[in-house]
Length: 172
Image (cartoon, rainbow, N blue to C red; front, top):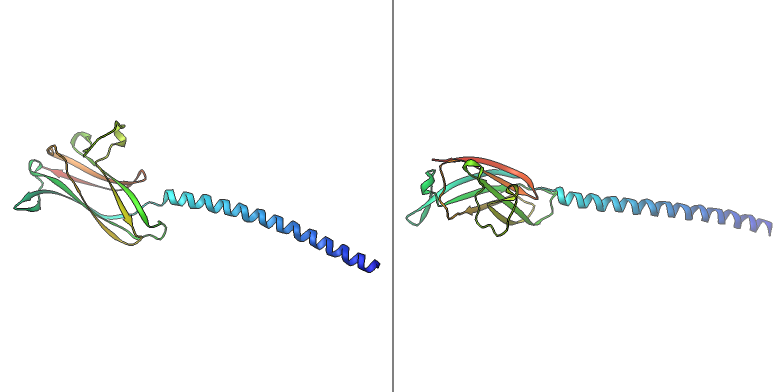
């Protein structure tokens, strides 16, 4: 009987030790899951699209065709082309892009302004693209009612408040 009590005591100590290890590893696992969730959340916010080949073409219509022109008084719209580069770090889905065109004198060109905003928050147009994770060509057209003025312009492309690319052009 004493042998059985000794075996039982040894088994009880092993079970208590094992139970302690299970609690420890469960706590470690919970902590790692929390860190993983935090990192995934941060990656989602910080995963910014990469852009290449940003190009802008001022255009005018002639004989039912749009042709390039750099004469300010003739420009009817701005054709904006760029490529979204592939990325495994960015989840596919809808991505909002902001196009900000700054004209001579630092004036932001606006299509529609329905609400008052700080001048740093003004933008020319917003475009939602369905990002696939693969290389994608994007073509946009910006049109404004007012005439374009001669001078230097810059086009800035943003996602989630981060500047993706910038290009400058001049209208005569």
